[in-house]
Amino acid sequence: MASLIEAGWTYLITHFSDFQLACVGSFFLHETVFFLSGLPFVYIERAGWLKKYKIQAKNNTTEAQEKCITRLLFYHFCVNLPVMLASYPVFSFMGMKSSLPLPSWKVISTQILFYFIVEDFIFYWGHRILHTKWLYKHVHSVHHEYATPFGLTSEYAHPAEILFLGFATIFGPAITGPHLITLWLWMVVRVLETVEAHCGYHFPWSPSNFLPLYGGSDFHDYHHRLIYTKSGNYASTFVYMDWIFGTDHGYRKLQALKNEEVADIKDN
Image (cartoon, helix red, strand yellow):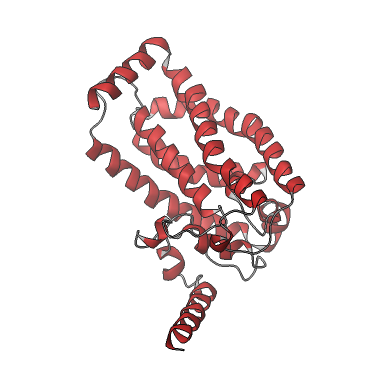
């Protein structure tokens, strides 16, 4: 398996420049993973499949879904891609490389864990700031147009927010200068995580059922369906920041009530 990955990587670095791989390659990878993981939830919601796992009974209209997709394409090509192009000199200066040998899985996993921790901390505080009255009204309200989120709404946001919170995602890699394959793997797991958090469904196989401190779809869906001053649940991936700073009280109270109802039903 390792030799196959190295062979594929050798082909990439001998046919494309570092700039092409880090910018165009990263953009292509992001778009592929994002839309392949997010689009199925559009069709699942339209078809009414898996209703028993849907967190909210309300469905988005076809027009609302199409509006989301259209604007996402505009934002990705007009905001995300230019940012990737502009950030290349920074990553290059900080030591990002694409050459062989590839980093070990131990190095990759340690760096990605570090990126998650850094991203979660920055995102939490940035997200709380976006929920102040002025910034919510003029910036963050765009993301909250979808009170019933679906996978693709994870990146539906005001351009200023894309830049603001996108900083949380790239800060960790920017200061460590990782190998490009580490950056790509971080991008993939981060996209999959945020799509899952916005998917609108809580399945038996959802990561939050198995990973301690992981928020997931149920945790973040609560944030979307409440008015901005009462929402809480500001963290992107893990729940400990909200627990430490007491911004998950409403969600925890609701969970306790649900658990009591389930217990009562079982007792009867």
